[in-house]
Length: 382
Image 1 (cartoon, rainbow, N blue to C red):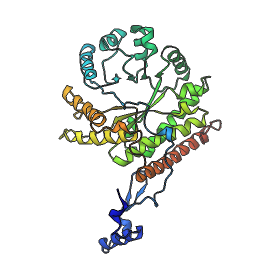
Image 2: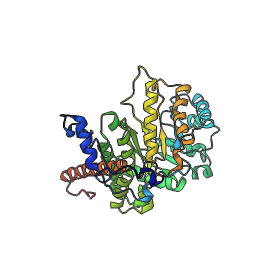
Image 3: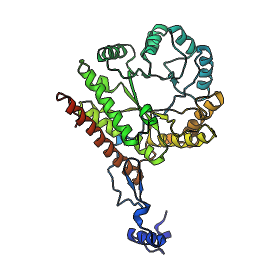
Image 4: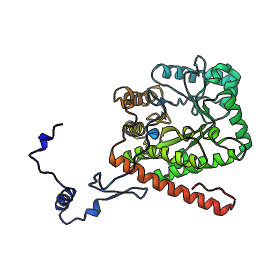
């Protein structure tokens, strides 16, 4: 835009804007318009770039891992294997790009898993499941070449680090691109944790797994590269963008403290819609909430996403399709995936990311200090 268009207007200083704001408030105090978030962050009513100068994320921390957009990992709440398989095949034919098994069939034996995934080439679709038994079931029913190309994450954290270390070794040999441990904040989010608390929990849980497995002789890059993180998406739009952006640099800082290489410092980040802000009556209002949540996570650059059906837990094919289509519209019509970091460069988002990250790291350090007081031999992450 040509500067000549503004030549007849006198430039306004920030103090001029503040003066106009004070005049419009009459007798009210400017401080009364400051918003205080649950994380304790003060949001000024009239921000400007100079006041909110912030350091930006490093280039390799921007965006997600997927060049073509995030993976759509819609859950299918059907327990019968054959019915699950029919629903999954339909979903994959209509835009879904990953297989989520946490809400799937009751996998009592490998035969159930074989029925549930019949006709699906798992070398083409990442698999996400918290139950490590899924991996054993797949080994019993799938070929070696297909298992070698398996992606996603199967498994969760455990206090039995001997068994967990053995699983890492097996997965590394059989499926070198597959994650072994999923760390999520579903419970913390549902119980009211704010964004800083969620991030602090993720860091503490990740550090716990790293300590446990490094103590069993595993290499730091082997462990760090197989940890996958799931954050729930909350209702505060800009705070959620900041949360999903901040966790990337925080995770890199934490894993770097253990000696991880730059490649192993890169987070595997999954977004999942939260449940605490959803309503049953009227359930259709949840479509608006899910759309805002999906947009926030997408703008922050995630690797995969699960949106619950708007009428969950009583979902059906129609409601699952709507949640899947929200993501497809963001990818193919809003074309968010054309930018590596769509929210990058917004000085408010950059500042909020930095401010939230500092608070989350401070909370994490307090957790580390408390643990060290309980155990003098504890290795604290600085």
